[in-house]
Image (cartoon, rainbow, N blue to C red; front, side, top):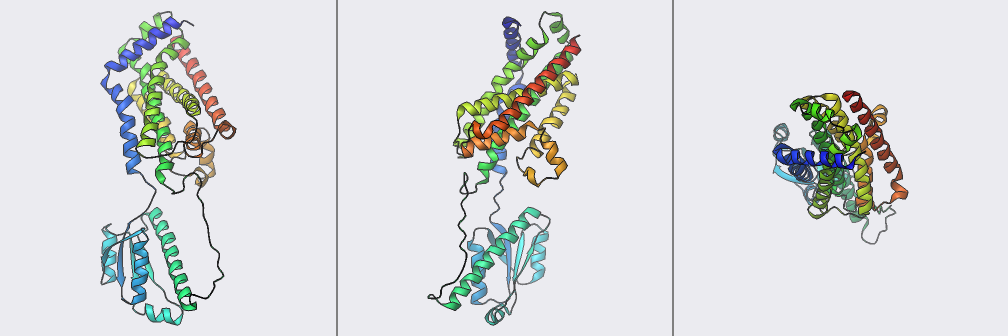
Length: 373
């Protein structure tokens, strides 16, 4: 293996990237655009749910209950309706997600020991509806407890269980702390696979591959020389995205930078080799782009645990997720960012990424060797 030939190929590829404005945009602007777009646009925190209230009772107790809803921060009253069809109209027009109906005899039934209210939620948004149900139950229970304390008097002691929840690593349950490390992995997946998948296909389309094949360069030298500039770009993008996550989105980083570099290197090797394999197989930039998005972006977005917990997926999908490198990288990033985990905890993810990097590198090398032969 000749280092001079590898350096010459890497230099040629770097010059080609610098001359291609599309590659530069993909390499440096796309990661920043994605992390800002995803970081600000995607949030799992459901607050200020648009709420319309129909209070037939208009009593002290009904107003107290409504205040508990609006002061919770989860519900935002947008209108006080005078009829049920107004609630239906606002939900139909997507201006409200939930309607709260308090019957006219609410105060009298409450005094007699049992009262009911009705909530109408927009079930087309299942996640928000489930949150509405949970928040509503919590607020009504709190209202009932306050009523019980009032009836028994201040001196009465209630036998109750006091829940003292503690959320480790993310005390405020900020979804950005959960999402940003995953976004970094997704960005690296897209960039590593997409940029690399075009490199060999571009040589074939431009007719320069025959010239490269006629040189003494070996397949391994070709792979290293072609991938080296993209590895440097990937690491620059990685630390740039991590810096934005820590500084702009205030995601804590409690782990080791050396471990972050190690995990990122293995992951980049896996996705770069995967992109190189696609490029060798595809033969055209258009097909390489489509295969790259199909095999990198979709699995990385849907099956890596970025947004959806893998444990909630069907068993068959959970099995498929084991062959998605992004799954292990996201687990490692969340461990490094939020938990400050070390190799004693993250060695399974390290081993899995090493296997993926080795597998894709070997397959890509053998496949390219067949093409030049």
